[in-house]
Image (cartoon, rainbow, N blue to C red):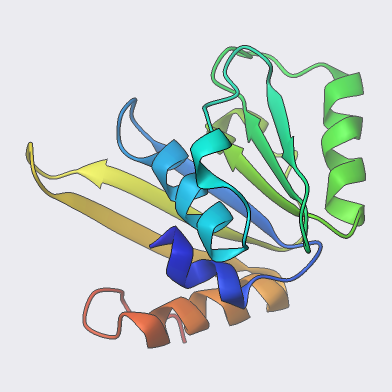
Length: 148
């Protein structure tokens, strides 16, 4: 899925990922890296480092908020700085952002339906986020609800 979404992405795009442990958030980031021409085998969850940066044609910033029940102002300012740079920012456990969200983003939620099947919910916020959600709908017309 990430590999198919990657060609749609542009600098300053923000993806917010939600899902339980093991739902596939980091695997989605590996797919994004593969689709962006970045080495997917170097992708690991940045749970302890908080942020991994993957350089490339369009650099990818991979953030994991799992260990941060409360976000310090300095860290939020760093995130906001990423949102303004020519990078793609992907944030796992994005629900920890509370109301500190970018103006535009693609929101992806991965949910286990049973031990073999996951449900994926995608929606966009802001003009760019809605455009990305519509492009995802075009990739999987039978799988994702219409965003219009």
